[in-house]
Image 1 (cartoon, rainbow, N blue to C red):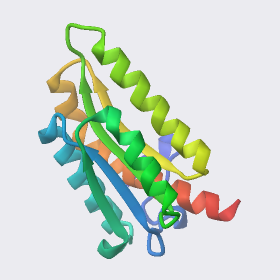
Image 2: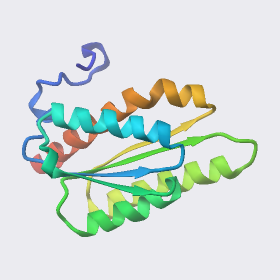
Image 3: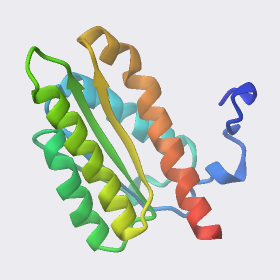
Image 4: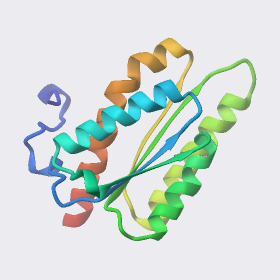
Length: 157
């Protein structure tokens, strides 16, 4: 359940009804223990909110930079009501962190806008492994909720 004090939705809100939705998930394998936990939490929440298991497609890519291309390929199929991007980028000692974080985020946004398709971006960008571990379950659940709410919103507009 979302906290009412944050202006968010209760899981019983019709905007979080996933019964008629088809959802695609793209998961980066890099930092796989974290991305597996993100995916498990996301999938469990999707099912909790009514998305049928048969209506969830889940694909894997090597890392966060490859996520947008897989999202684009799924968007091209025109069979999904929303997509979910899952990944984990942990800061290192080089500029590579910024490059991967910025480019993957921009790519995810570009696909969403180009295809007018909701994409819940749960590619974590953290300073360290401890931060990633602390966020993996909550952010996976949040991604499921965002995907469902936005799919329902776009259906209404």
